[in-house]
Amino acid sequence: MKIPSISTLTLTLTLIIFFISTFSPAATADGHNHFLECLSEYSDNHASISNLVYTKSNSSYTSILQAAIWNLRFTTESTPKPQVIIAPNHESQIPPIIRCAKQTGLEIRTRSGGHDMEGLSYRSQAPFVIIDLFNLGEVTVDAEAKTAWLGAGATLGALYYHISQKSLLLGFPAGFCPTVGSGGHFSGGGDGTLVRKYGMAADNIIDARIVDARGKILDRESMGEDLFWAIRGGGGASFGVIVAWKVQLVDVPETVTVFQVSKTLEQNATELVQKWQSVAPYADKDLFVGILLNRVGSTVSANFFSLFLGRADRLVALVQKTFPELGLVREDCAEMSWIDSVVSFGRFTSALPLDLQTPADLLIRKDPNLRFLKMKSDFVEKPLPEEGVRGLLNLLFAPEAVAGLIAFIPHGGRTAEISESALPFPHRAGNLFKVETIVYWQDNENAQRYVDWMKRYYDYMTPYVSNNPRSAYVNYRDLDFGVNNVEGRTSYAQASVWGKRYYKNNFDRLVLVKTMVDPENFFRFEQSIPPVHSWSSDKGVCPI
Image (cartoon, rainbow, N blue to C red):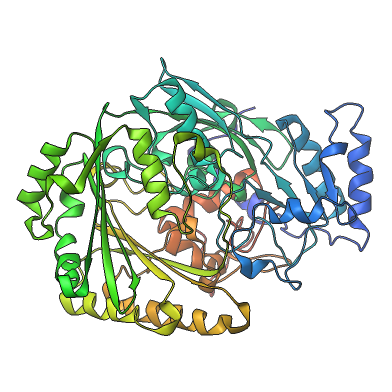
């Protein structure tokens, strides 16, 4: 049965839904035993999952739990652990998990195996179960139709690799790092080197399969356009368990060109970064030029990295005309296939260096050298003045920033042509570029020093980035913005404090979709979209 369109809901129905309680029963101390007993009752009528269940008494529990933890801040003894981890190998095994979790008062966290900087897919203050989707990673490419189906447990690298095995003239506009999980990446937006030509990953999703709070398996037709809208940029975990995506592949030329040009402060890096802001967001759609800023010895380096959908001679002519200060010459450029450019950028731009040599290496699921980290994001609407750039680069000289990294990712092009309300991802026209900032450290004993540096950096950037609200990218979730209540209801006003940063005015529609498809708020976490459950004149108004 299709979910009715929001436009057809009557105010009376909406008000009824508003007053449904979001309270879920607390799990008892042995709730996971009741949960497992409940699952066993489904074993005769559903695909068996007994060999896919991991409890704390299972010898593989720890290795399965840690297999997709990227931030060592959440590997400590004090980090809450799941009662049970279940790794389904078929979507039909997920509805019983949802039903039994409801019956026994356990929360569900869904993990697609990617980076998850705040660890929300594998930790919770309430008793919980992890649905780990790493077994749902099959990728099926139809080169003739220019489409692909991929399980939500597939990494971006796996998608890129399987596309290349079918055609070297097709690609997909998603992230730089091949170890990112497609499940979270697509549901938050997803950008990479093709963002200016083809938009976000979410802009190129044409179907999906999701298990909703009722345990129903839905595709685009049966879920309806409102829910399909919400999961393409609105964070799918608020609405159900996304198990698969269908994507529209895009055309890439036989030969593309890449370059990486590094300039230090002594080589006018400050002036080049300042000039880049007036060039990269307005360049030819075939041209992507980003910047990585980091400490190199006693100086700071600005690393300009580029993908051009064409040959080197045309690229050099274009850059020499629009950005002559960079000094790009033919010798800086390398021509290659699109898939080889993916390997190159995966090696160069990964938060943790990957030893990628061939397209087959894109199937590697995990980086070997994990660290403690904190990440922030911003969107820039007006070019930073030169003194602003200079102060930003000076922050990288702090001892805590020795392993810091700041990335400028240009937007414009196709992304800016799409309406802010077309999908939940709202950061379209008017945004010149996205800023990603990350700081690493090796020993958690002095973690607060690094967190404090990040706060100083974030405060410094305040005058130079978006405001009212100060926007952020939901794929880099940041709990500093605020969280929902662990138990009981979370008001619209409370959630909008963080929600408006990620989604701007689209947050209101996301709340209505949530109210419609999960009014009891079963799929909940620290920054999940809440259903609206009451009117409040003093704490914010309902978005109707």
